[in-house]
Length: 224
Picture 1 (cartoon, rainbow, N blue to C red):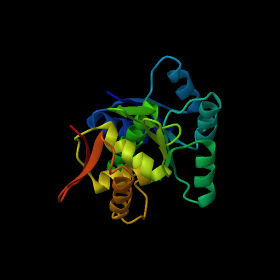
Picture 2: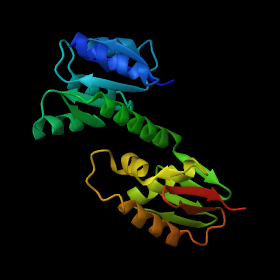
Picture 3: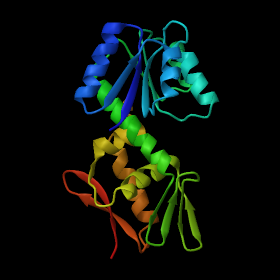
């Protein structure tokens, strides 16, 4: 079960987030500011942080910067009452992975957390292998024998997502949310374009192929 740390100085909002996350199957821990968040992480393993910006003692920006400066890649979803571009930019520059503006739709909050956790899992795995073909996250490359193919980032992440769960069917929307992000304005048919490019690149690969599940989406399967 994933453990989510909620750093929010508004007690009612903090309790609401924790209740929603608990009902959604997470373990939720609430703290009132960034200082308490850092202290909690010294004794608890945390999978993701939901953090307000304006908090006493250590604010959200300082919390995220301290994590990134320490080398932590822990996913952070920043929540704030500020909706200006400069505030959003400051959040991402500090190291936030996603950003929501109050008032927060709690259903959307849960969706974004699931997407961030899936992305974090993909990055932490770093390498996958099917048969004699390996997929290296660090270099966005696919290797088979002596041949190495370096892919554009989105193509690689899409392929890696499929390869990481062979035979699992992903809808176009799931792939869009995970690879392009929930807020993207990109046409979902972009997934089809990228899938066709991947099929062209690896048509002769003996280890895997990408199959269309009509009316649903795509899956990667191992060749016999």
